[in-house]
Image (cartoon, rainbow, N blue to C red; front, side, top):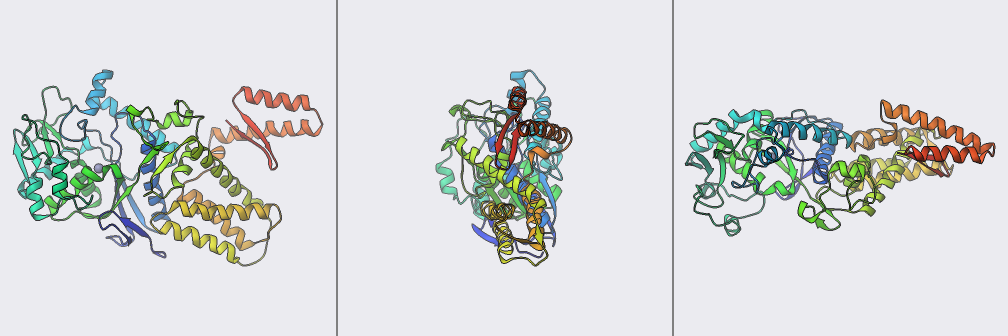
Length: 489
Ligand code: ZN
């Protein structure tokens, strides 16, 4: 690769130079959604973070295999080994088959991800389609002596494992503090210790999603699917495993322990975690009344939203912070992101019509380009990369006002930055110029605005006001600025 890429590794707690196991090929596994409800703001951040990672690595010349799973085996409510199956609960409440729930929310998830302009993964395996692989992994862990069978269920034996391999190395916990944070076992529990976790659970009679296994008719533990599917599609050792910080413990810690128990090694070179989104300084949660789905954001239909925010405004907002920093959602922050986004795509459109005189690259534009790459290759620092791209926006606006002269190479470099980096790597596209019907809409509104301009030029203000009025009535707002007339739906 022409450029070195540095990535913060949760496991080593250091920023490391990225080196793939197979030169030129990067294998990435990201924990996907559990599909029993609509995608919400919390889903947008990992989806966009790993989308930019994949786009950047491809831009740098890697061949990337991006795997993101769908968790469709119902797991238990508290993400532990008790409570009700989340998908089955929803199925029962809505009188549907669990797989109907899964199908419905998977389609909706894909639609939301497409609107956010995230690329689909190369492989999107479903947990329910990989039961034999999970059963064989449980057998391996049993053979290695790090699991035990109890009443038809199989549990991972954390204490025995910890004697040989440190349990907690990924999340920075020790077994002692895991123990002190575990709930006491109640009498009905089959586990030896409260911190042991299920690899296979025997199904109770009312449990709907169930499969045969050597131990019982039941279902796999939640952490198992990612260990089994990542190894199947990326190999027992692969490059990057990503997910939200909320998955670090217990999910990823348990995955690492399962991999080590079965194969002697954690299997992942770089563990990557994105931080969480807070809403007006608070954690997002159904009980707090600040749980916002992506659809509510796109339509503005949630009580805490002052208006609708477009998918690109949300994407822009998310990349304004480094992925490892917390990010606080507020109407003000989203409105500011929307403004920044519009300014940037406008500059990207304007650059094509700028005048340029024959000549070499200026130091200023070369600095901007270097700054953008340095930031992105420094642990995916999108926030600093955007700051450099805003420098490019400033240059474009100065050149437009004839306050700055561009050379042909300057102009080419600016065009490259907007098309290859802003659009290609950061995935920021002009929502008004999309494809298909939106292109036609753009043309039609453009035509009407042209008529209004002519009316104004002829001082026929009654006509120009009537056009504006009519557009407003059908939901198109127009705004007159120095540069011309802007419109939005
Ligand atoms: Zn996972």
